[in-house]
Amino acid sequence: MQTRQQLYAQALRQVQSRRQKAVTLATRTMERAREEIPGLDALLRRQALAEAAAGRARLVGGPDEAKAAQDAAAQARAQLEQALSQAGIRPGDLHPAYTCPLCKDKGEYEGKTCRCVHLEARALRRRELSRISALELSRFDTFELDRYPDRFVPEYNCNPRENMAEILNYCKDYARRFSTRNPSLLMTGTAGLGKTHLALAIAGEVLERGADVIYLTARTFFDQMEREKYAPESDLSRIVQEAELLVLDDLGTEFVTNYTVSALYELVNTRMLRRLPTIYTTNIQKEDVLRARYTEKTASRLLGSCEVLDFYGTDQRRREK
Image 1 (tube, rainbow, N blue to C red):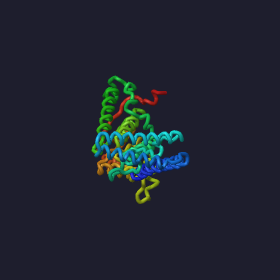
Image 2 (image 1 turned 90 degrees about the vertical axis):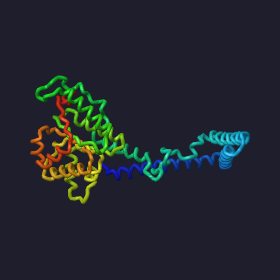
Image 3 (image 1 turned 135 degrees about the vertical axis):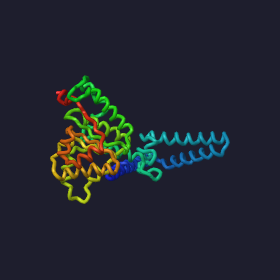
Image 4 (image 1 turned 90 degrees about the horizontal axis):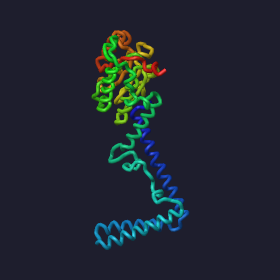
């Protein structure tokens, strides 16, 4: 997982690499054209002069002069195209075919990072997330409400399907209106109820809207943080502290130590102070269990910083078997 700075540096390199490839290909095509077409440079000069004359005539000449200049330019263009065609070369191949028409694959446009770099960074992040999660499968339109009981269940004190419909609509709205002012979410419920699915559905849509999104399982996060705890400032620490949206999945499955409790408090507190939303998913449903596992201080900070979404129903993964 890369930091945002590393991600954009890679995106810029890839955009500029496309420029270099386009320039190299056009240069080689021009060299080949010169070898195969005697007098190519004269044809190119003639076309350039004719196009320039036609442009001047349109601005300052009369209708007849403009028409004559335009005809001359068309004739020069046709002669060049015929010569190139006989050599199996298209006129456009003599010039670099840039991917981005704005910055011409330089990565900067009007003094700012070009949109193409932002798009490339977004694609890189999506590939990162897709390698470590079911991001591409977890969309709002693949979430199946009919898998939840459509009746009042006394144990849950609700109709699970109606409850999940409300949660689904809330998550859609959360993603559609995403900003760093969004609240953090704590999705709770037993295994297989769709917590990860909806967390990733939010992540996928928010990513498409241009925000930087990070997904980590709790076990991966705490294991790596513990390995890097003596580093002055680890990349992972920067990544989770800077992400505009962080998804920390399966909280409660990690091995608990004093360090993991401290790391969780630091994560929750830092992101809360920076006003950066986090989506936590956990199988822990009871507050007293959460407090016993992570201490009163950490659990209170977590609960106090989140909107809690309670998932009820039957393990969907078992139903699929």
